[in-house]
Image 1 (spheres, helix red, strand yellow):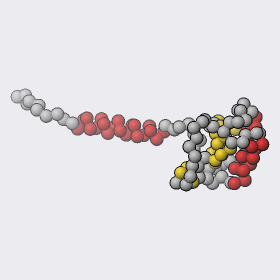
Image 2 (cartoon, one colour):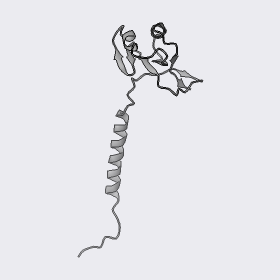
Image 3 (tube, one colour):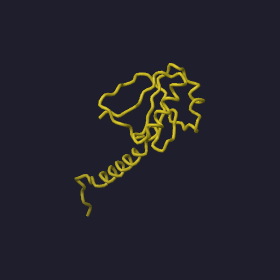
Image 4 (cartoon, helix red, strand yellow):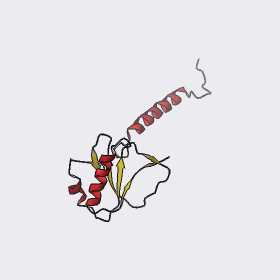
Length: 124
């Protein structure tokens, strides 16, 4: 007494698709762009840059990064020596960073001869 199957059972297909969706969503949260996590300040007007600038990141804890690589205390001038003085420098500072720390970094960069120093913000 064999029964003829005249319909497709889609429940296993749905189960497999849901598992794949969970895997994709879970791994997507772990993929990062390689940037140091910083909550940027917000501004109404921003400028889109076409060239690749030197990126200096100042975290809320006061840690300094140059192009996503940690900079030891006082080591910023030595690491910036390999870049041209005409290069654009973008400072990414966490919005809770003390103004004194931010100004100190910008002042140090400008004293090394870099004139194109700007702050990265997020558009409102």
